[in-house]
Amino acid sequence: MAIEQTLSIIKPDAVSKGVIGQIIDRFESKGLRIAAMKKSQLSREDAGEFYGIHRERPFFNDLVDFMVSGPVVIMVLEGENAVVENRVIMGATNPKDAAKGTIRHDFADSIDANAVHGSDSIENADIEIKFFFSKREIH
Image (tube, rainbow, N blue to C red; front, side, top):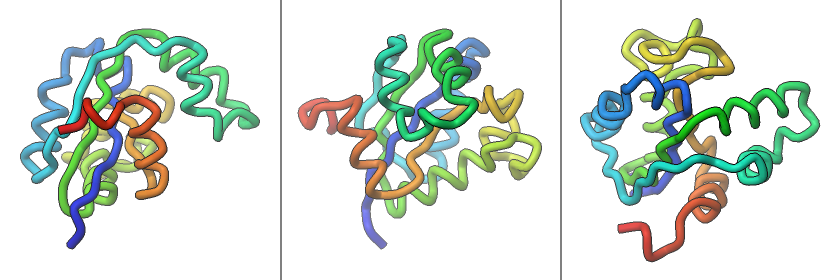
């Protein structure tokens, strides 16, 4: 199995609930290592650029508004098949469909306020990691 890196964001709803540590524990207890981490307040410009792939979708402005509504915790997770493992740990995008014991099942309120973001492919993980972190910040 290949060691990969993936991007994870603990979104404003989960940060405001004070569950950062519980979410990080989910990743670490499943074998993902934190290679980089920072807490940040996204600007509207950064959130718009990061989620630019959704620019033409009807939910885009609401997504940007949500992502700038409070601080986020941005991490590079590393481990065997990190992209897929992270997505399993997060659970389905809609918390109503998320399996019991996943982050979204346990901490998300809605499909919009769904606690975490995770890269959906190795290629996107590389792009997303470079958006937030320089090489010297990843250990």
